[in-house]
Image (tube, rainbow, N blue to C red; front, side, top):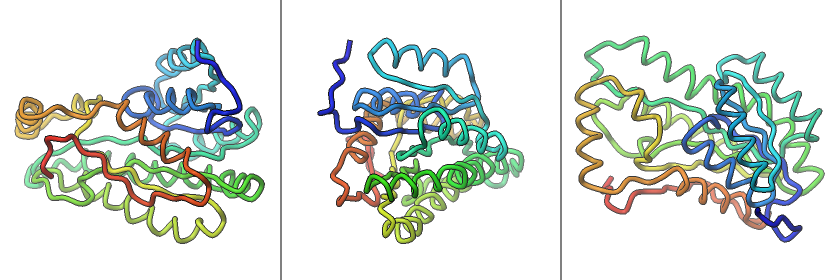
Length: 258
């Protein structure tokens, strides 16, 4: 069992993690709990959230499951109300829910375009709208709060057939920069995490044969990042002294050139 003491860097903090039912979200929730935070885990799949809460509890942490779809603004606001009522409000938000559906633009996969926009942009904004008031209030009381958004290296680099996904992640990175300028003066640190290829469920959602072949080839050529690699970085960013804000962090597999 993990020994929890006041020396833990996130002791006393309340973290909300979206997209927490698997991958980067689940790993980050566990890591933040290890570092001392009480964690609210938000995703659609209730059974997976219950398993995650049980794992966190078994290791000495405290977690609250919030079953909600981030594209449902009312459900997200209700989740925020529960965090305020049951945990006293969030001072750390890891805004991580997202989907990746690459395909050539000429396939006109409009449903996939819209799904990526709805989840990666609208869902992100729903969560920001619901929880930023809590972050601002916490920062005023405690001197620091964190908004960490999951972007992607695709926000910076060019990947054929990933145009819509890449555009949604460019939105996340650019939004994060603007929010940092707006909220930093209120002691809310804003960071964008931009991973390269991470082995998660994202790849299992891909249906385009060309994209699947590219992903399979890349996995043979290099060792992908793990969700735990990103989780370690999220914990590091949140655990820095209040005066320090990492605006943008790019995390790449050693073998990924771009």
